[in-house]
Each structure stands twice: as C-alpha cells, then as structure tokens.
View 1 (tube, rainbow, N blue to C red):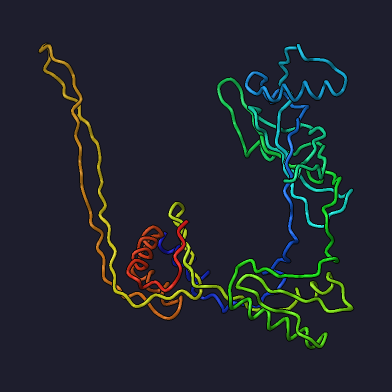
View 2 (tube, rainbow, N blue to C red; view 1 turned 90 degrees about the vertical axis):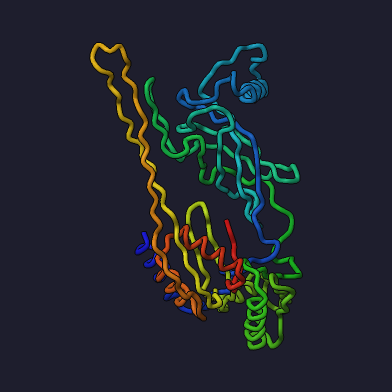
Length: 366
C-alpha cells in the first residue's frame, strides 16, 4: 500500500510539469448561456409484473384513473390491481437557445415500489420549467441501467433497474426567450475563479483584439468575470468563438484536498510547507478469543461449560523524527514518503501541520 501511494503521488504530483496553456473556452462560460432544468410526472407501462403495487403506491392508481378518464374510460369505482405500470419522475435539461422541434434526452426514475423499469414505455409526459410553463413533452421506450431477477429463495439486482434513460426522448415545444445575437453585454465567467487568471485572460484578449480590431474590448470585473465589448462588424457568435481559441495559463491557489472517508489526498502544485520536524506512530492492539470447554468428571453430575479465554497484546510501531518541508511539491512528497505513511496517516499529519501553521495552503476536508 505504501509503495502504491508513493508511485501515485510521485507520478501524478511530484513530477507534474508547470501549468500548461489552456484555451479560454475550456476554463470559462458565457454568462447567461446555461441549461434550464425541467421536471414532470409520468407513467411507465408495459412492465412484466415489476411495476407499482396499487396498495403501496396510491398516486400511481390515481394517475392511471385520471389518464383513462381523459381517454373516455370510466374506472373511478374500479379496484385496479395491475402490476405492469409504474409512477415515475421525469427530468431533463433544456439547453440554451434550443428551438421548438428539437429533441433532448430525459431521465426516468421510479418513485413507487416498482422493482424494474426494464422494457417499459413512458407515456406522454409534459415537462415543466421553474416558471410552471411546459417546455417539452417526453414519450418513448425506456432503457434501464440495471436488471433484477430472482425466485422464491434468492434474488439478484445488478445496477439500478428503477432508473432509466430515453435518448432524444423529449420534444421541445417552447423556445426560451432571448437570443444570443441580441445580447449587448457579454461576460466570460471563470469556472475556477482567480484574480491572476482573470487579469491574464483580459490582457490576452486585449492583445488579440487590438491586433484584430484596433481597440481593447475586455475589462476584468472581479476574480470571476471579464466583461467584453463586442466590436462592430462581427457577430456575437463569431466574436466569442475567436476569443475562445486564445490560450492562457490558469493560476490556482495552493490547496490540499483530503477525503477522510476514502483516504484520498490531493496536493496542488504550489503547496508549500514550512520546515517542521515531526514523528507519527500508532499503537496496534490485537484482541483474540480462544474459548475452552470444561468437562466434568464422569458420573460426577456436573455440566460441561465453556470458559472464555481472551488474549490481548499491543505493539507500538517504531517511528522516527523526520524533517518535512521545502519549496517544491517534490520535496513535500519525498518527506512524507520517507516517514512511511498510509493515506489515513498522511491526512492526520497534514491536519496537524495546518494546525501548527506550517501548511502554506488551503486545507479542504471533504
């Protein structure tokens, strides 16, 4: 385990090259150009006995009755006990500037006690936006991501059979208001906000714009956004496309991310530790049970009893004091590996170093 951690840290972090230049389009988004979430309730039919039980999912029975009433079939007083239908929630993301008639993918998830949606068909389901308007309608055969099978004595479930997808399963009925070409103010937002990256991106854009249009078009507003002034004679789409191909070198703050549940440690390139001396050792306690049976003498009238016998031993792992610190990530990784630590030990060490004020980076604990 220690050897594997050493290889991973050195391979992924210790010999990592300096930050490479990245296209602006890969580290930014255009303000206002985003997806919109849609939600709807529908029914999946055609299941092979794996649908909702009407007793435990009354909303499915009510939805089925309402649907049949709209089709002219009166089942108000009927005692429905079908098992080939399931109530589901249908979700989708409506892309920006999508037009009516386009198709989008939808996700289907059971909300009752159905065991599988495999082989089902989603009936026409209106998808509503946050404003309550219907923007798309979903319908079609579902593709479940798992399968369930079993008998009276055993069952097997692989994946999540109650969750499914319908590729291109929704038809867009309403177009979102606004057009990209009609946008007067263009703003680029950084996915990872940073003052240095924002100012560097502004300089790169202005250098290109001055050579291309003869004027400066970018102005940094804060560590997250850069405002753009579109020149005359070029469309907003072409303008953003040209700027998106420009290269910048993103700068990120020094950060250490640790996940205590999984034992994951990620150390950023610019993390530094002031030189400190430390040691780390643990006590291993082993408890073993070896009960013995006590047999009475023949014809003595006694009973056989089980006597407990517990053995407890402890072992203190020898530890040494090591110097950890330096101006490079390689020095830090070498110092931690020289002590010989497991991921959980490294997490404890980093937390202690941060408490001592020697970790010159942000410590993020997940």
